Image (cartoon, rainbow, N blue to C red):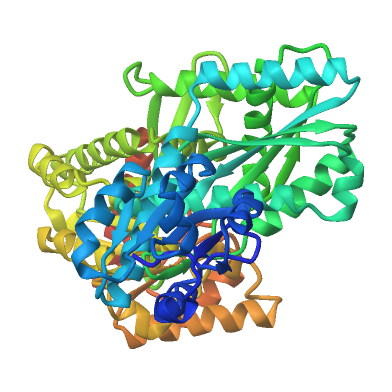
Length: 581
């Protein structure tokens, strides 16, 4: 685990000693790890710097400690700062020094003759442990947060000042929680929190002048959220300025498990109007952060009254979504996919629809992102897979030629440990031959944790199902990168096909994708085909399959049956004409 390098604004390690040359190697190693080591020749110098230190390394050979004892250190020690005792250098006295250091509150004791490399690692590990302890202690529950906000509003009312709350909703914290150890995830959050605290203390002049006598409380309220409480003469312009400045600070990468990782977050901000309940400020800031997510990574959204209505509508939709599967409100439509040459149906893509009892058909663009955000996409995706496979088998039992059933797999569903077992179970219960099931993944999913992706794809391929990459071309995958994955088909994103007959750039991109796929011996599917010109382009490029409104819209199962009947009749008529000729 790599410890994030400390910036100049972070607390220093103080070294109390009169013999700095004795500890030179230790100082250099700590500095190389990113710590600022400041020499102090006296206890008075230590006291003057106590606000800015995260640890004190005390040389037990220091004359003041020899004369007055280690109790002098305990009197001026910060509650959260580390005390590390450095041996006086006499091995015979180490046992006595260790006991005295323990009573004085030292967390580590560096014995005489200990290698500097080991000492530096022990000190850095102690700093990390203390940081994690402080992070856990600073996590607030709902009651503590409400008390903090009431206190801030009460003081602001007395001072005739203002109060604002910023909510930093950390999207990446949810992603790393499953892929890193608890200590690594905690370290990342601690480093972000510390960076936020230090940035508030060292605000630029514009922000300081706008927030005169500002009191800032940065409190961590969950694994993936920070709240910043500001007091001072605030307006929307000043608040927006602070939010954007702190966003720039948090956007800088941090070292997590040896990798430079940038945080993805959304910022919600709210100004207290002097009338609403203080406890509502946190909820309003969170609501604003939620809507900031719609505007993209690291976006800032100020709370407005209309957001409350939109938030309540969204919460109502989420509440209805949670029981929709059990209430039988979902249904499947199927969009045919045809062979480019003969136009016969070769596959059907299952697309979920939600028939809300009051709102009617809810557009997928509204409920699919909500299902992904809440995790409901996992049980919903399992239902879609089960229903689609059962319907594919029913059409085969009715005598129709078998066609592949394509089912979309969301990122959350793909990373669910039960996906493989779920696919096995559905194939067994439906009786569908695995070769007639196609799982569609997005290109972006291949870019995340590639070793896990390769392993999971191979496990699915061993079942006999086929794998296709949906919306290809939006993730800029390289040819060498794609070769690692056991996939069968690429679906060209509709955004490229839309302009192939009038935009040379779109035509060039589509052509490059087709050539790439042919080099890898993959099937190529054109999505969003709406015009004869787009179909002609796919034929010229020798694409294999096409899908879009030019052939058919997504249809309910009964209409798909009629579509298949017409296709079968057209095939028989064509065969009869050929025989007669």
